[in-house]
Length: 194
Picture 1 (cartoon, rainbow, N blue to C red):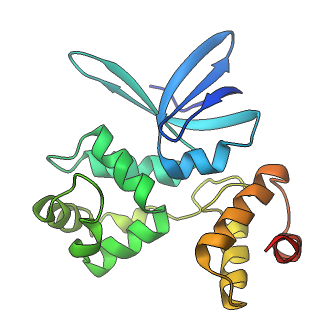
Picture 2 (cartoon, rainbow, N blue to C red):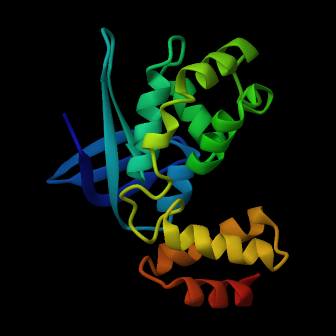
């Protein structure tokens, strides 16, 4: 029903964001990955997944189309609801989750809080063939984690010996400030900040 919401970021927490668009404030449930991508921005575009239940109508927002697609796939697995899918996407990035599912690593997947081994195995079995449809950079603006530019810069920094966590933190700040930065400039500026 909704493709995306673009507007002013009024408030953001690690689990939700309020985006004002057209004079209306939309409360969106978000993952930690999305929060990290938008926390320093004033204007945002979040891809939306709309869920209608008997007792609630919920909007889930994602910084990338790939994350939203993966959220939808997770919801297709019996026993996985919106909050569980969001918790999975808060724990692992799209590419990390794709690798976990492709390698069949249910033990690693069950590290997600509230996810048991049987559900983790079920997710892997049901989604293993569907992961090829999602590209880690699918439709992503260059300034967002999971984009090709971001991934190349992260790869370069880790190859230079910096930890992934420290590199991701610096790159997220940098891409928040300059969304259209090139890979070379991102690496150069990150080296100054690390």
